[in-house]
Image (cartoon, rainbow, N blue to C red):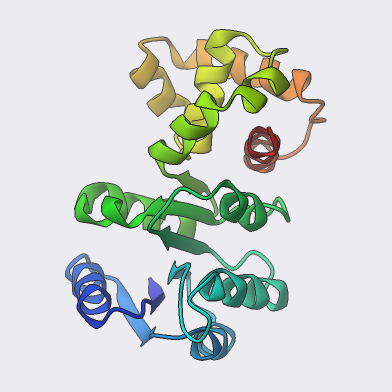
Length: 214
């Protein structure tokens, strides 16, 4: 699997590259700024990009903007964004095209190697991987809770796990319910959010997008 890494801190960038290579990934480029990131993403067309939100020259959301620019040129380009803080807008913008292949993790999560590598693989496969801390913060938002009152408490739990990118089987294990029960809850979620029948993976992404819209 070919990967482009973007991180301005040399030690962290080197650490991420070494970690990925240790797990058999091929890091085809590692850059430290937005313009170079766009160039490498468009030129290399990697299987997934691991991108820090804040990159030179602006140190604001340069990494995110570069990823979105490349994703506009290469629809569905898988992108896993790393951020120092929980910022709902970042996740919302990444998921806006409903195409999947998107992840948003806090940088602290990189130290949990198994979780980080799993997120990279999940995003590369076209799924979603939202940091549990982001999901928890959204769940605690009064505005968000009001907007999802049509869902039952259990359905909100299931949707929260869907936002993290978990499969029905994994959600069932986490909530101690059967996979069949999870499927029933997800179908109820799709119906209540007005998501018409389509490819299930796409509806999961759209459901997460509605979730982020709060």
